[in-house]
Amino acid sequence: MNLDYNKTALLIIDMQKGFVEPGAALCVPTAKATIPAINSVIDKCREEGAKIVWVKREYAADGSDVEIPRRKALEESGLLGVLAPGTTGINSPEDAEGLMPLEGETTIIKPRFSSFLKTGLDEMLRSEGIDTIIVTGTTTPNCIRATAFDGISYDYRTIVVEDCCSAKTEEIQRVNMEDMARVGVEIIGSGELIK
Image (tube, rainbow, N blue to C red; front, side, top):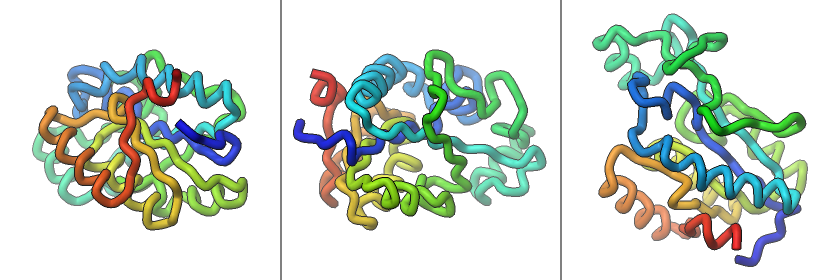
């Protein structure tokens, strides 16, 4: 794959215990299985000098800033407080086991699905001459897709690494990858990056 890593940012989206750990309130069942592939892409991008951006989600402990549809579901299940800053355990915003940001790597907290919405990500990337984003993480139909569509909208070369993303079902994963490809997102496997 032809990439100028000095103009590339790798986004690792929502790979946090509250989304990854079995039994967590927002667990995506296939997310944990993507960690080895994500780590291989992280290693390659670090080695090549790409910018590494850890994109995370946090919610107020009272749930006041949770999206309305998700808030309703969490209220009904008695699970408001998931991803609250400073919490630990399976419903926390802590990094998923096996994934660890290095000192000097960027972390941003996003208030909604897209990594670009109200985060300053676009401005930061442009100021550093980044013109390509590689998108990994969870979940494919929500945060991955919203970020990829915004990446295309902001004129970034947008690459989604399929085996580094996860959805609730294989069918949801497949359909969303096909849909993103139709708008110009490059869908690749991790092997295409790390060879």
